[in-house]
Image: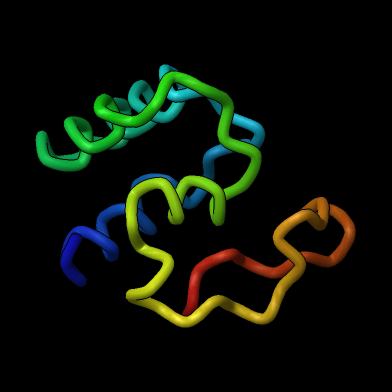
Length: 87
């Protein structure tokens, strides 16, 4: 996926609550007006629960495109975790 797709992924799925199922992710993307490409990519995911944004990023192939932010991927956002997306 390219940088435009990564930017859309971040914008559309920023507020998803994890863990989240594939069906939840597809519905969230549709509700937020995602492009057919992103909805299609999410629809093609294995039907399982995704534990974190990092889990989803890895499955979509974004893990090598953008450096990982300096946050604990397992931290609860209420416990001081910052946004999972680079600024």
